[in-house]
Image (cartoon, rainbow, N blue to C red; front, top):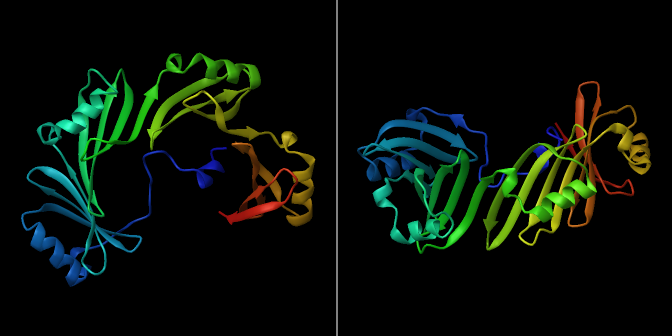
Length: 273
């Protein structure tokens, strides 16, 4: 599962992307002028080219900043560190609605598309919490690591009854657009499982590792017919609100492909690794 689902799913609040370091002398003049006119006192400047945007990390007034500038010299996004005293009262009140006592570990302000959002991170009892709140104090996204004891009993009972005893457990709770989601990961009989439940404790998505012997015959027949000579290196099952999909990592010599199938064995998508 670690190999396959890493290609098909995203984490909630963090996304990694490819970037290339670039020297300032190679920055287009229109991009460099935009930066230098607005941030003439910047220091510790580092430029990168990422997905067609020029990203510059720098320090200003002893605070870290990051800009994304397009090739026309327009600032697309600006992220800057904040001191606690710079966080608006409306943002702090929203945090207090979720957490009574807290000590903020890191705070950022993001300006993008004319909108301002605040990204606040902290730890409580060694568990990570993250808030994304707009300038009016509206909660946009919320993420909190949970101890397994904090997971609703109805969720734990369903997992134990339907799937078995869960080992090596990790749990979190998130909210976005007013919708809550519990995410629980662990192993049942040494096979990894990922569960997602809504705020009413209804299972909405389940992903699990499969042994090759657990792959349905319809899928095996499809592999034999369409991917002759390939061997199955890994197999996973995803059930997303009733839509079942099988993901297989297939290898032939040095060629590796990730293939998704519906339960009848129809090929849905092929991706090369």
